[in-house]
Length: 282
Image 1 (cartoon, helix red, strand yellow):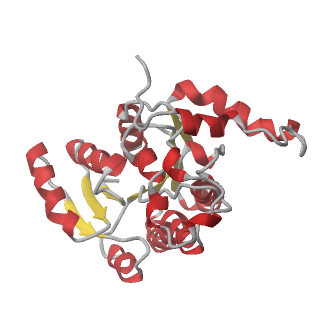
Image 2: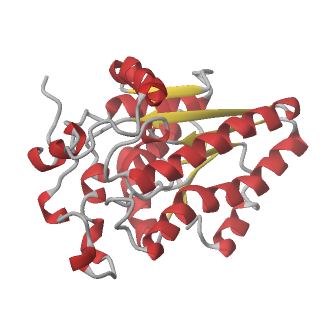
């Protein structure tokens, strides 16, 4: 399998992984959200000494998804995504719907058509870029986390439903990495169309609550999973957070409805205390 489509390739993880797959000799179709990103990405690829087929592919647009069916994709990397920050009782309806459309509904509709082409060939690989937030939850990222929990459910179900047809399915679960994405999540409130006086929180005082890692580990893992060099279904980075992630998955079994009533959780206080774009100390 050599023909790869990676969505959300205009920035972040998708941008770098598209380059690395091309450097490995894959025939890469790099999907970007808007036309303005097409020439920019082509120039950046040329500077890296690789060639990308750069296509405008907004996963929420039916016409864009239809175009992708003509590209004979053998490996699909569902990387496109957005993050909406804020309390789940504050985020406006339009922002909730947009989160869902970009992170789950659009990618799933794109995948439906491409997966059926893979079934006809009897081979294919689908990689869902989820998140550690698809396995755990944190304050102020609940709507984003919900969309990634949905991705986890879709991917795991798809693994069961497509294996008899020879289709591989995997997930990649990045934790807190310093790409700018996490910090932008905590700025989305600036464009809300709502009544600020009704918000529970003053978001101008909050920041992403954790120190963030160098993204190299995700670049390497995403590239390896897409290339078929790694065959584990779930791939969490950084691996140093694996045990914490597993323990948090189990934690709800021991919680009580009355735990901490009237007090502020440490996770929320961290959003007040942390400076934006704080790197993990070496």
